[in-house]
Length: 402
Image (cartoon, rainbow, N blue to C red; front, side, top):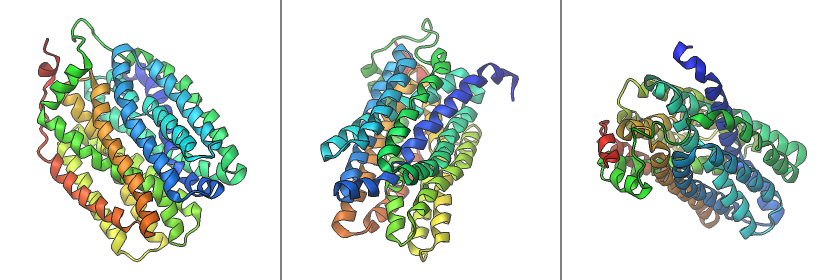
């Protein structure tokens, strides 16, 4: 461990544990689609729509959460996020109508994830470490979220089997309050740093200036595809696996394996982002996703094909986050990084909403997911093309000009 990192080791550890919980729980909601739908007499599209709203709420709230964190500090955002997470999961257990499950699993949990996820935690990590360590720590933080997916989704599956969905949701909701304790060490690295150097601009001014930079606009557009891919697979892969004739636990382990492989993929992506073209890395990731989905569809279905596909997607899963967030830091600096990442992430969550909702809609209408898989291939190829022209040149002076 570098000597320069020793003072912030507690911050890195707390951040990683917080991201493990936030992303681990979020990745496990697909396990509850079938039991909650059966218990309430819903079609699979009802909870799919609620989880689609969750992704959209996450994206919208992330913009405001990032702005508040940049202006006033991240502790109040993280605490509010943890409370929303807990209330949403507990309330989900008591939801017996479509409106109730949209309000709890959708709006409340979405707001909770927004307040505890990458958009708030990664800027704090970047501010905490020396500038040359920023790509590395982005990879570490992203890997932590992936490891939470690997570790917690199977545990959520066991809780579901042991307690049943009703009690499991309440226990998991209460446990999410631990994130409040983990947020405390991040407090010194939230909000404006060096106020005498960086001007305090209106957020609308920051937004308008950022969109005048073509590379940022392309980044916003391209991140839609990432959300489409990962949200569709996270929510619908467990049900898809059951439809193929496999045990429900295979679906849980599929999501878990994605998380495990992404621990490696995200870390490697973070390291490479400090040495290679971040735009080039993103183009490769999206092209590789299109190839992976194509191979999965044309290969005869088996346990091996499911696990191989899960591993391939895992290496590419959140590997987009270090180069994407790294590009924002390179182009605009860290002063408004949480807010500007929130805007990019909103696009990601519009894609997530589209993938989750369309997955449920097409399944109820046509009885399969074929159209969504094919759409994912086309979007992957388009994203590879969109990211290629992005330039890694600083526009910070242009953004912060008084």
